[in-house]
Length: 112
Image (cartoon, rainbow, N blue to C red; front, side, top):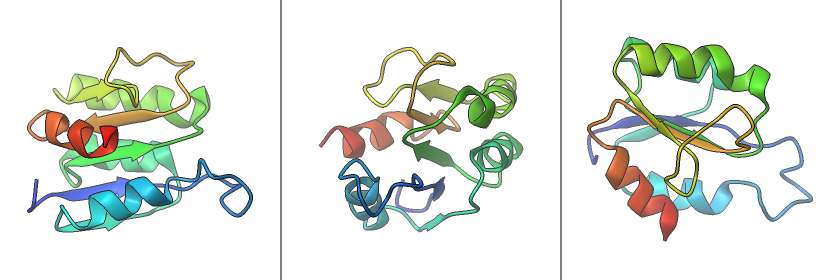
């Protein structure tokens, strides 16, 4: 995971909500090569499916943010779960997606 390029995003209420992804970002940033923020979960997931990113996580997502991108990741052989490591579905407000090689390592960081 130390050579991985990840992507994430931040919710619109970052200034007023403690559930803002900053703690996860800080924990992940010291364990990976770099983290990018494009501003669109659909684009991040498409880039993951294409092999440009190794992993992605984000909070407070809606189905229109994730539906197509998660299909692409799954079809490309990637792994998707909810933030707790359970089965992801369209109603899940958060997700973790990866190329499959680093998924458990990502989950370990996000669980702590």
